[in-house]
Length: 402
Image 1: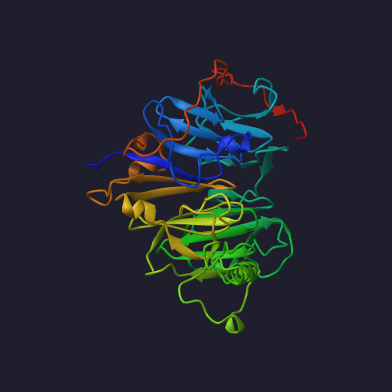
Image 2 (image 1 turned 45 degrees about the horizontal axis):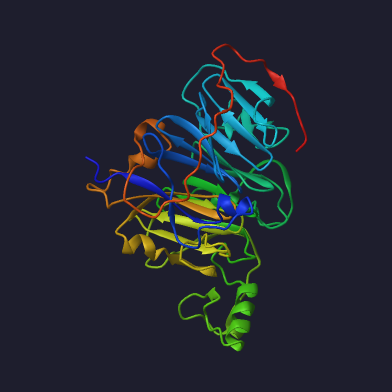
C-alpha cells in the first residue's frame, strides 16, 4: 500500500521568464496537479507538456492547452511531436498547433517503447521528424541530445551516434558518427538507463552505478572544471568567498588539480556516500540523479537555480538537494529540461517498493501530494490540438523548416 501521494517540483528557469515576465525566484515550485494529478512531464525551454489523469496538457506562461487523445509528447521550441495509438504527428509552434507539419501511421502491435522510439526508427522534435534505425538494432529506450543520440539496447548495451566534437558519443574520440556504434567502454556492463544532455551523456547500470562522458564546460560531468575554479578564485579575491560557486568539499590544491574540459570515454562517478543510482537526467549543461534511497543529487550549470540548492551557483561536484531532506520528501524520478529540473517526490514510501506513481507506465498511478509553494496559476485555453483521429491517418511527410 502506497504512503502519501506524489507531486512534481520544479527548479530553475520558468515559463514566465521565457515570456519576458518576472520569474518566481530560485526556490522550488510545485506543479499544479490538474485532474488526477501529474504522471509524467516532457519539458522544453519555454513550456512543458504534462500528463494528467485527464490526458496531456501543454503549459506555458499564463496558458494551458489540452492535447486530447494523445498519449506521449516530444517537445522543442519549434515543434511538438505527439503520439497516440494510431499515429504520430508534429505541429509547428506559433502556427496555432492546428495544421500538422508531419504525420506517420503507427501499426497495431505490442505496447510501444517510449518516445522518441517509433516502429522501425525514432522521432525528432524538428524536421525531418523521423529517422530509421538499422533493422538488427533492438532498442529499449532512446535519448536525444542537442547533436547526438544514445540508444539503450534490450540487452543493456549502449549505442551512440551523431555529433561527437565534445566527446559526447563515448567512443574515445571527438569524431562524429553517422550510424549507431556500440560504446565499447560499457560493453559487458548491462545498463538500465541512458540520458543525453546538450553535449554530454550519462548511463546507469543495472547495479546502480553512474557513468558520465562528454563536455565538462560547467562541471556537468562532476569532474574538476577550470572555468568554475577560476570564477571561484575571482570571487574570493573580490571578497565574495564561495557564495558565487559551489566547490567540492575539501578541494585539492589548484596546482595539483587536473582540470577536464572533455571526457571522451565513460567514467564511473561515485556520489557522496556512494549511494546506488536509480535514474539520471541531463539538461543543457547540468545533470541530476535520483538514488535508490530517494535522494536527489545535482551538479553542473546553475545560473537559474536548476540545481535546486536555493541559489544560482554552479558546481562541479554532486550535491544533495537538501530541500527534499528538510521536507521529508522521497525523490522517485527526475526529468531535466534545458535549464530546469523536474522531480517527482512523495513522503517516504512504506514499503520502499511503492514508487510506481511516477513510472513510465501511465496506468501506474497519479502524482498527488504534499502542500508546497505552487507555480503561478495558468489559464485554460479554449482551443486545443486536434484529437488523434479514430480512422487511419494519412501517411507521409509535410516538412517545414523551423
